[in-house]
Image 1: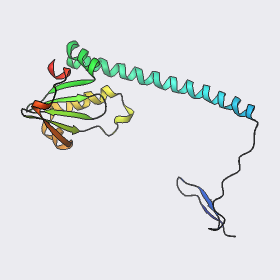
Image 2: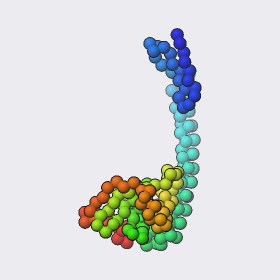
Image 3: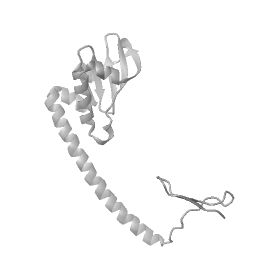
Length: 168
């Protein structure tokens, strides 16, 4: 019988001959009561860690919301909180930036273009921080913003229902 051990990388596997198949490590047997007790303890620890992490995230989101409020004012911020969208006036066209991760609508004279643009570290930052960064990018260098964004298609302006964030 031939054994091969590959221990370089994410997968540590012990292989046998093709006829024998794959060997899995044997787990020690414990009683169902002990298993349930261990699982309950683990769940309490996990819940405490998740609650602490969520509290940090909420605090960071609140800080980002305070910054956005300072940047855009109370009236626009109320619309942002209600709709999850922020209207940004560019030099050439307007942009509707959503809180839901990099989806932007470029509102032109005759059509609305769907864009996808997001930050490299978007998944580890508050959503409102991402909205602020896209707002500042669109206002500072509209040409680079449009060049960086992926275009997904467009809709005629007549068929596009103007959202509340764009009306305010």
